Length: 427
Ligand code: NAD
Figure 1: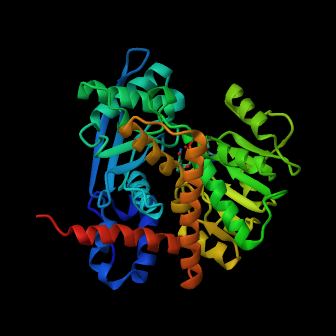
Figure 2: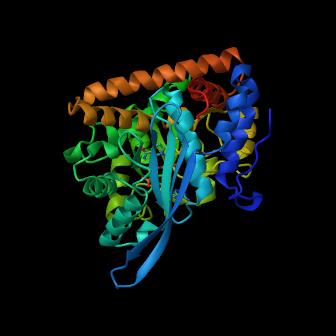
Figure 3: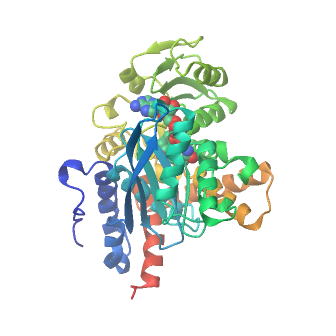
């Protein structure tokens, strides 16, 4: 089997998160059915990558330029699907890696999508609401040749939300000359959004954590949980864990780390964060150093912020029995080895945070059929898909004596490559 070659636009110096994705593919490639080996190279190359200039007029009249990206990693199983991230550290390498993980994730939960992702290198906290709308609309317009309800369907990711999706939908629709609700998911309910979508990723994190806990005889009731990231994924994960009797002992966001060994009030803390734009100063907790978060005594740790947060510098400090990856790529391959040696189970991102794309799939189906389901129906279907995916991966990991991440990648990569091999090469 050949070793991955870097695309010419990435060098060893700027390879970034794409390197981690590639390492994960290299690890599982020999474990795949030999008949699929000739096609593995497909996973090492994004199908197409677009870099766009996104100029906006700031409120003071000055024109400023930002760099944006949209990557289709693989569309063998269906249209591209993946979020849009606004963050000052977004790079092409990061978007490629996130798109690659979407390819695997969509195959793991068996939704009929390929993998895609997008982003703009911007700190959205520095933009006014009008500037944010301008940025979103220009970015959407620049990537409009790549997206469409049967082509590539964006969704929210870090620092993007239902309002950003509404602007994207409106911009695309204006170009198309008709209202195209199915071009994005994670929309507001008033525009064809789905019930259950805001909590879907956090709910999936909880379902997979609960299933892992059952296997390992770790009770949820009274369990101590530490959560990094207090946005869409982190907040919903923490809240749903707490609703099931767990104690949320630490929550970290970009502003600080709240700690209370007897349990934080997740709802009150979120209210405080929304009102004050910081966690610092919230009542009912103490604030600890951000590095101390990793050694907080806990049973579950949920990283739900950025990539590579669990790495060789802190993996040996983690006390949790189970790490549930709400974020994409939060654990480096080196840290994976350390956690495995220490007997810590990692529920990998491509499974644990797939609840969001699963309900995005439901939203897309509902938009196409213009027929909307109840929240109970959505949560029940989400629960079934997530627990079935969990058990398939757990069983493979047990039978073939491999970590859950490898088992998830074997299942995901096999589905993608079988589709690829069956389609054959064009022309
Ligand atoms: P978000 O913007 O809603 O929240 C991000 C949170 O992370 C914020 O609370 C922010 O303060 C915190 N954060 C940022 N930088 C940090 C740092 N350096 N240290 C500690 N905290 C930091 O984003 P989100 O949608 O919740 O996404 C979080 C992660 O989950 C990302 O990896 C994303 O790709 C992944 N994810 C999101 C979804 C989804 O449906 N939104 C689905 C699957 C995976």
